[in-house]
Amino acid sequence: MAIDLAETLAQAFVSALAKRNVALPRDRAKLGGGLAQAVARAHHAWPDIHVDAREFVAFLADKAEGASDLEAALAELRCADLLLAFGCLKGDGRALQELDRRYLSKVPAALARMHLDAASIDDVVQSLRQKLLVAVRGGVPKIAQYAGRGSLDAWLAAASVRIAIDLERAAEPRQAGEDELLADLPSPQVDPEMECIRARHEPEFRKAFQDALAALSDQDRTVLRLSFLDRLSIDQIGEVFRVHRSTAARWIARCREEVFDKTRQLLRERLRMTDREFESLVGALRSNLDVSIHRLLGRSQPR
Image 1: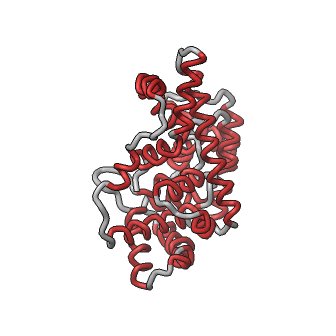
Image 2 (image 1 turned 120 degrees about the horizontal axis):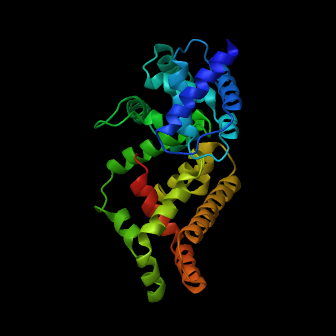
Image 3 (image 1 turned 90 degrees about the vertical axis):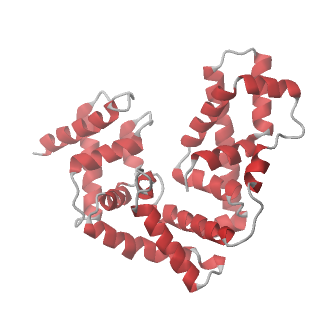
């Protein structure tokens, strides 16, 4: 029976990956065993949430897509949190109850340092719940975007802070397009030759940069969004994740370097350039890194 289950789950996982044209695992038996263990861990945490195991495994395939070692990626996923998220997507009553009871009930605590009144906190909670569970314009509910690499608690806390910031900004007068105009201003010290080289390779540069951002964990992308888009201080980011300000500062610096290094690596692999041209492009990348992070995160990460 256990072998049959492992084979069934492996087949569901492989079928889901096959639709995305990615490399398929060779050792189906090992994969099936890992999937069976992942599903068992998730059901142990939430025994009253009932979903189709094959559909849940296909959901896990979406979260593990792009990993070089699928078995290792599965072991690192927060499968229990992902089961709750998947149960909510499928409309499971117990999953929806637990989302409210164990997770959304913690949102007021996550917003405590923002000094909001009770009515504003209620607005944030209701807006968050709606965004999580209600599809807009033919899309899917936002909870489908939870990737399971960090805790659902932290993911929801960061989302609630961003909603609170949005609500506060909506209530304040602001020059239209201010952030967008700032993001599109060129660096005052960019060399014209660098600009020419970068403009020539703009599609490859943008794709490499997007791929580098996508390679970050959910938490790392959230940290960058809070820092570059929402302009939270390291003290405020530390409060969101309940870490010291020095830890938040190290996170931001590490994320910036990871994006730069990954983008540099991808450009070297994908472009045929002279060493001089490549170093000029990398120089432009380094000098405009923060502007690029702001621009691409703002355009590629839906709220």
